[in-house]
Length: 129
Image (cartoon, rainbow, N blue to C red; front, side, top):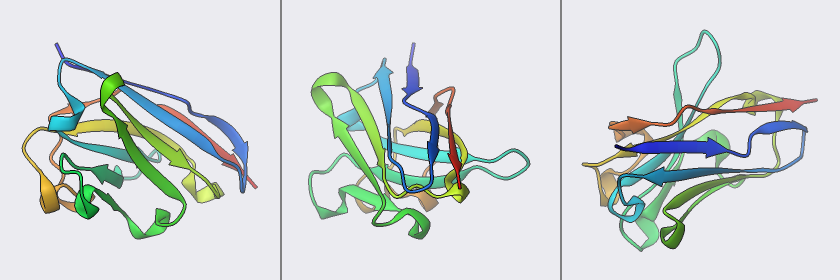
């Protein structure tokens, strides 16, 4: 059984920071393309960023709206993926989801090519102005 459990969401003021965690069981995160996504009610789910299996410059990919503010990382020993969010804006308010794509790797591990095999249950992030 595969489980992805997100935590770390909450309410912050604009300009604040949060770190989301995604603890994974049943698969090994260093062997999967791991992604963070977000969704506002009534809108489609949006890819935030991904971290690949390879340990090079292609390892992480972000959508333009979060570049320079969000950082994805992977801690293999804990089988956990993180999303560090800084400079939060009200438009970042959403439910944030962790997901695993078992087939994409290298340069194909990016939000636009992500095809999730597994999803977490989500954690809510609310940013007030």
